[in-house]
Image (cartoon, rainbow, N blue to C red; front, side, top):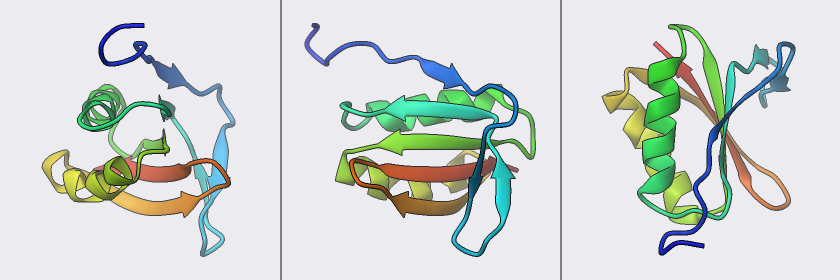
Length: 101
């Protein structure tokens, strides 16, 4: 293990991956970014890379377990020409849904 932990890769979700938002809206997920176990600024950099690789209208799901990273991602969306759709707290992490505009 290096100084900043193991290198995580952006995981592409197989077709059909979807989530349901709090309002009941079903969304298809184009990419899943696994940021579990990593801290700032790595989740922001991984999210930026994933947003740059998907098409306009695609949705990425970011998995994060670092509270400061979870707080930093929604404001980052303005810089990325993206929209923060929702952050959902799960038992061991947060699921952050972001759509590329």
